[in-house]
Length: 211
View 1: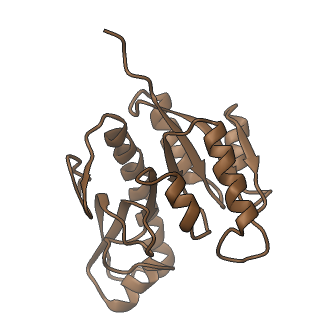
View 2 (view 1 turned 45 degrees about the vertical axis):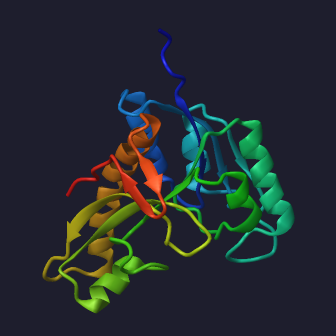
């Protein structure tokens, strides 16, 4: 009986790429039955592209167009084309600072995942760690979820809790959330690759994100 082919991952990121590095390290360690077949960024000098190049992985800058928070129509088509050309099974957002909607999500329906720095549905949107700190919660964390047409509203795949400590600043809390992200994201992708994540509406079953 032949082994199933590894999940083909396309990673989109705008920044330094720490979550991408954690995912690729987990793949190299045999913990995630997947392979990164494309890394793309909307920022030409993004660290994520440097990391990908250093690891010998296909990588490219794709210009986002004139808008600050979304892709224009031509850019959206370019991203879709690049991911399709790489025969990507799953699109992994790793700090990609553009809202994806419309045609992109139709092209990869049910195959786009993101990690958000809060325990969704609490504190969606920007600077979620600062929202949690300002609100005064004692526990926050991070969430891996499927991407839909809303803002951080897709089905939740897994979560990891992070305590808010006395004396925390936005910086220290964010650093601990990022550490949790680097543990949760590879585990969630491994669960998807092994077929352990089942989605029904906005609910998922089969993956325990851990505390």
